Length: 393
Length: 150
Image 1 (cartoon, each protein chain N blue to C red):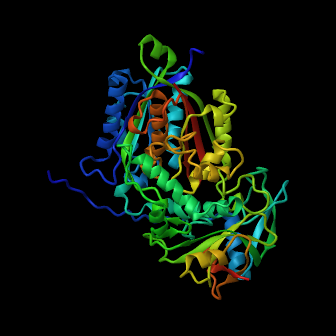
Image 2: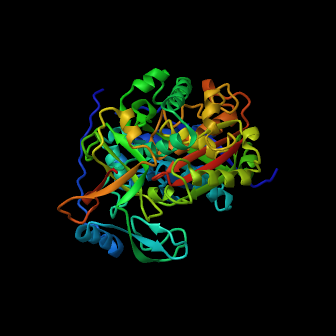
Image 3: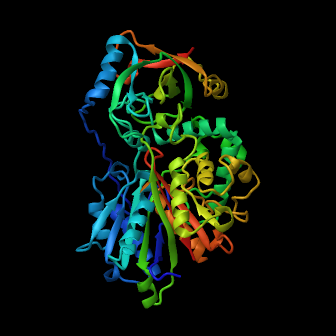
């Protein structure tokens, strides 16, 4: 065992809801930070640097809201930077905090943020603005219809049906019902999903994530600091990011580098983080996965990319067989995942936090029994920038 | 206790420069009612919409190539939900690989009955042949053209 690993020593997460009228934006950030500090049994003086997790400003309606975040994270007179990779922001901020420690520059680093998506009445108009103003902005592009088109291609290539999509929602809602921090916790049936109104075919209302409000925070520390201070930790053993082309139309047509039905760069990112962690056979070595999937159909290409099945598309049959349920072979999104809670700026941090809690054995009612090795992912922008981690007990 | 809120509306105006390549793409649409792509040096791929450089070869693109008007559907969706500042539903749009192009171009699908989603999805299924239609009066913008079933 090497002596220069990076550990997670404190975790804070809000109980995510549609709105939090009792807290303004920095108060929400502070809520998660205070929980993480208490979890790490540490006071603010011990934090040497802060990485701030904040996706598009327009979602919280505050330009450069990291300015308000400085006080909320106790960042006065400390090294402080903001990370934004869209939906991947929370795992990217955690990766940046990891590199702060792994570089040897700092021993204890905090990463934190919050989102109030429920306060934004126009989230798909905000997200339409992530498209290029030269060519694509005049089209009604948004994250829902972009991923509906991924789903259409996945259906054509691998035979996914609308019922298969509904199965993902049913599974994740059942998981979320066990997680007191999840936003949508009411179990649903396949028929309820199929009967919910169509948003952007084949995606229906119950195939969609909610607009959530809440914060998250993690404290990371060097192995030496953890040993010297006799702290409990779980370890980040694999970290990677991979980006692919902006152009959705280049992920189809003749001989595309990536393929819009899948998540090519996510697969590459998982390959990199598995290599770093020494994982050769994820189907045998991974015990739990928290994979960023904001719409039901996208969980399939996330599972494919994480190689929790054989070839691409095999995830469909394995999910039908219950392999990714709590109690199944490799539970995917035992927290309920992004499909049940999406506070965009910290959604991918929640994937890391939940994976850490699982391998720590602290996930409570949605604990995967015996989980020692877990993986987390985040997808950002127009399905374009992906972050992945391996976390081990 | 009584918890208060405050509503705000952001309305910000931008005047985006489109650059030489997109400007040429749109003036050709306006003046010739035709879609052009750019051929990538090295790979030979015809990129539509045209870009001044290839993200694969990282070289400048080297010539204009007329593509379409025929093509095949690569991706589609039908939107039935209203979103603020986006068009009233229902509408169908997606991506089409125009004849002679190597990458797909976004646009609306018009002339398809969207009242039965399953039937509409069958009509728009991937691989379906379409043709590009142009508005009689063109301003030099994306909405000057759309796709209809061939």
